[in-house]
Image 1 (cartoon, helix red, strand yellow):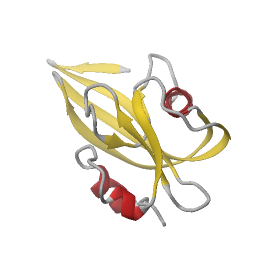
Image 2 (image 1 turned 90 degrees about the vertical axis):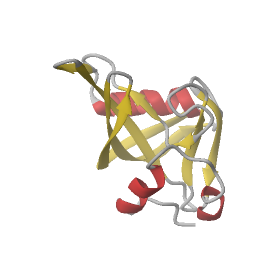
Image 3 (image 1 turned 45 degrees about the vertical axis):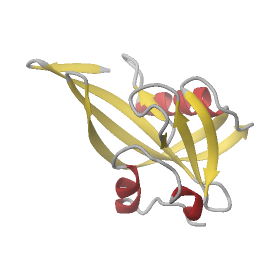
Image 4 (image 1 turned 30 degrees about the horizontal axis):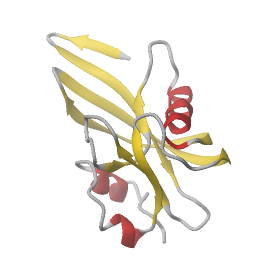
Length: 139
């Protein structure tokens, strides 16, 4: 969903904070801009008239092959976008089914523990936001 304010656009986006039973965090390597080649949580733009929950479910399935149940909002961030800003709402999710595989806008997917996460090139602000929200990998 894009909202125009003056000459700037606000683009509503969502993300999924997903941990497995071992406390590892689900990450995708972005295949396209913004953040091409960098690791982040699954997510993307909210389509017109789409609820956040539906957008999260769709994005996770497209990027990882997993089905999730969407839980509470854990936080939100703003990131620069061409001619505007991405307003991103991140939700805690639980996997219900599926087989992990990279798809759609992801060139790779992984479950990352804290040691692995520390070695990966991540999108700007990801680690700080996850830390602030107490959502870093627990393993």
